Length: 302
Image 1 (tube, rainbow, N blue to C red):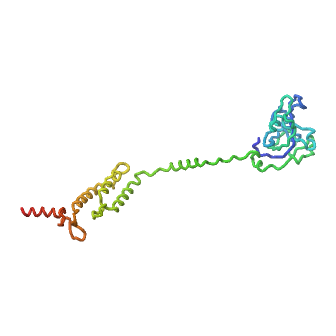
Image 2 (cartoon, helix red, strand yellow):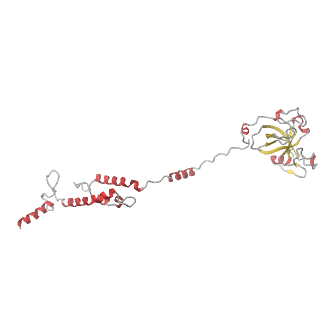
Image 3 (cartoon, one colour):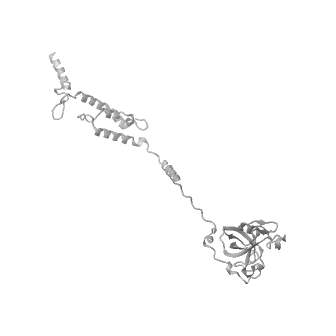
């Protein structure tokens, strides 16, 4: 009921009652609507029986339906225009209801309340501004006021929209880590061939450590070329670059062997600008040229 958009709003003075035919504390008999006396059954001097709505008092809200006619004399002069059942009256004022004498603790018998009508009833009575009991020509226009905008849009005046909780920094960081984990890391196979060629290029550029003219190939380079990581792919199968290395490395090692045999104590054979060759004679006794010359001289002597 209370979630429906109100069709009429205003402020009135209200009192309380409890009419169940017991005769206690001025009880005048059962409600005029034929409904049994109960919590939420209100009485109006003019609104149609069956009218539904809710009241608000100091932030407390209570739903109601009009089930009886009253108050009588107190409504004259647009004074008291609503009767609230005693149990609801005690609840919204924070007091207690006494079932023995039909009274509310605290001694307060009148309240100024806001009312919101959400649906007019189809019983006997008059819609619109209330009027005193049996005085339809005396409309209490001051008891009607514009519906507040926040209520007219469909929400309750005392309820505030829930705020979205702020995301904690650690939760945000956790989400970022989860998002980053979804991206697959590059496989080793993707970078194997490029890394191998780059490594070979860097080794060739660095040259030999002796500063000679041996073509820039060292034993360390040859050892690196034999590395299983260079020859083998990520799947353990020899790749094209590996096969090429297996063919070239023996030739490189043989060249290094011959290059080592022609290192001299002084000048060496085949030096640039000297016009020499690999087997040319030189003054070094350990040169390849001197050794071949000795063999030839021995054969001639025989």
